Length: 387
Image (cartoon, helix red, strand yellow):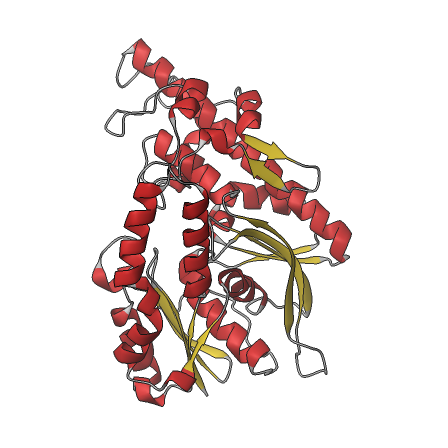
């Protein structure tokens, strides 16, 4: 049985193909289109996967999309209506996009692939993330943590999973706790990414790279915009953010009053730490400004790590498992992952290499095979060289 997983229409479009539960091929569309973070329908990635298997689209048994578009539409509709009159422009732009394109994802997929409607399935966004980690891991059971910007409504989910390895077990993923939009660790990090002069959904890794050149001097200010509980649950102070009311802005003037003017994306990043022997640009004022930005970067990086570690420790207490599986775009923060490995309580940790939305294609296909169809496990993802 062939199952094709697809993720697209937001960022990092991808396709993944299973044959009887074994991964045949997986690839991101950007590898072929040469468009960074390509969000378009992944025609080239799909063609690659089908060629690897030597089949046509009509020979697919199921096609699985990595989220439920109508639930996402519900979130956008309700959240923009609740924010009026501030969200009038956002509402108008979002509705134009949805009514012209995204509401018709089902018919678009059916037309592109030329398959019958009974072959097309949809899996919730965070279940796709969870499945991409757990059903690629070697575990029979595990605690589950998924963290990203936002799926349909969920931005963070905690739960547990079990697997059938042909031993009478049960394939199941239960996401038992969640944090919902607009409270999002991923969108929190992206707001600072924009303020630091980098592109959202592209430059977050640069913030992580900038952080070691700074000190966490502004944790007290970060605590005004990100409230953390002992169990890792969190809330954003939305008075400082605008991603929920705007299509182009992630933070507002109050945010700037707290952290300072944003960094010019065209400016050179140079500090006494990047060039300790006085080489490079000698402009002392520029170095001082950059040190401020580096200190803010370290402060929000540290706050993000602390939030994740609290969630991890809470999961350990509530699940009793020694195994942890992690996915979602925030799981691409390798510094936080390192702290989980060093300081976390779990004996075994598995993080999906393609933890962001591209991995959702694989997760959706695996969820359909193991949970919806109830097929036992055999596959373990031991490398990432699939496309």
